[in-house]
Amino acid sequence: MKVLVTESFNTLKGNIPAGKVVEIPDTMFNRLKGKVVAIPSEPETNTTVIWRNPYPQGAPEARQASLESMIEAMLYGLPPADDEQNRQINDMARDVLLGKAKLADFQRLLGFLH
Image (tube, rainbow, N blue to C red; front, side, top):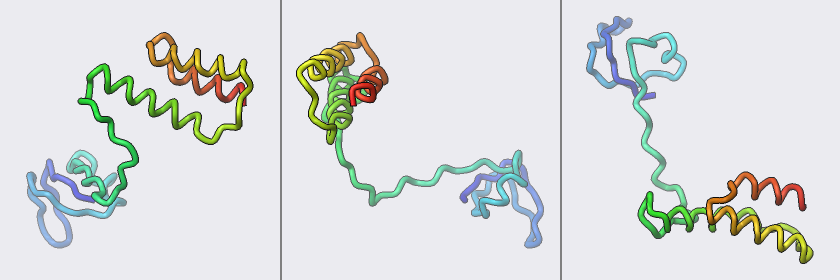
């Protein structure tokens, strides 16, 4: 793990000064608490993006697109529903998109119906 030394400390190999970035074993991090700060590792660059929101972050359209994508993903692979269940699902999805219900409410409804 990569850490920033905030307070110098001694090792068998000598003194590590404050301000230096060093690599330490994860197991040493707790022993050096207060003397080092973890530096977050870089995200893996070989991750596959399965969906990218086409709208700028924070835009109302971005929220809408994200919710629509989540609802679609939640419905994927579910067994067919009867007409009444479809009505309930569509009504709840509409309410989520309008901000009148939460995505968790939609998830609970799906769990209850299926």
